[in-house]
Image 1 (cartoon, rainbow, N blue to C red):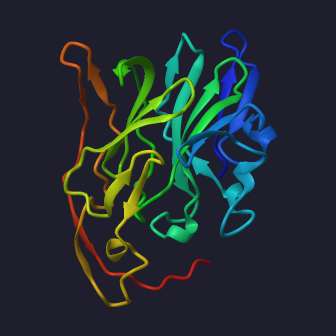
Image 2 (tube, one colour; image 1 turned 135 degrees about the vertical axis):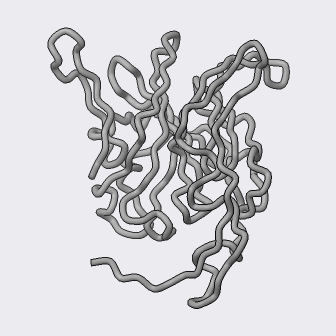
Length: 250
């Protein structure tokens, strides 16, 4: 189903705003001339009705794109941050995968301030649904308001939480071999085709694929300590073997 985030009046419960994670600009509360997207190493205007543009089926966006309710709020900027993923059907099949992204919304109006999309590299539900953490830190000699995110694929990202710009991208799960390395500017893990679901022939088994479909980072909350200046995450060290098979959806 289509998933949304909504704000209600704390006094009487009436709906103030409601924004969907996919669909047209009105449903998503997107202003195509003001909402920013980080794409191909640049901050660009999002454009019109991006949430309805699909590369495999024109109406599949209506079946849903969810989040797991791990939200973060910045009272100074009045922005709500969250990640979306888990596209409809089984996301192990790349033809059924919509964009994964981090979103910033205005808490008063619900309008989307920026979107930072993550080109998906794998086929195992290794999406972006982990918690965003806010931190102010010095990057290249400049104090930046940042958002730090550890994803299921085994990569960590630092974004400018004001604009959505990607600043740093690094591997935190060293055994990962679904991807070879990370293109930092576009924040895109480069997939190793021989370890993807689309590469192996029927009856051929791929082994020692890391991380397993249970992901490198699970949905448990992330903790940051100002004292140690370290992030603490709950990770899984599991690899897998798989053998592809034909399926038919009814």
